[in-house]
Length: 147
Image 1 (cartoon, helix red, strand yellow):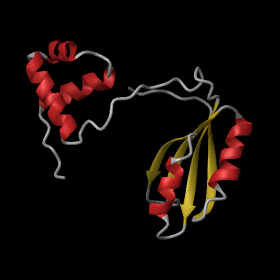
Image 2: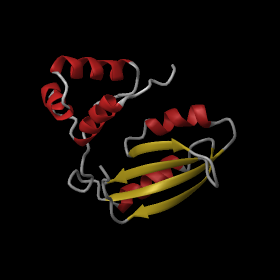
Image 3: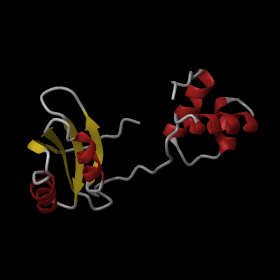
């Protein structure tokens, strides 16, 4: 699918939804200074064209009982990515997956109840996956939401 050209109105709508995804279309229209019908059609177009991929909630991991977080990097066997990514997506503690270039191939954000649970995910699940050659773990001491 081709990239959808975005204008200033589209960018303002995306900024509003990023700031507060629960606000009504009427509130978005007022904040962007367009009609409700125009806001509704723009949001529908952004959704249909895959610019808006899903609406979700941001959760404070500490308050949700996920007191231990780490970025885990993986070096993987060549040609194992397609199979591996589905296995990674099935692990509930894995909150973000990115295929990257550099000294490692994949970086994961892993959130767990505590260090014992984090250790279980890394040693028992990630390191034992076929196709994973090496892992490196970077503990997160403090999270900051930038939005």
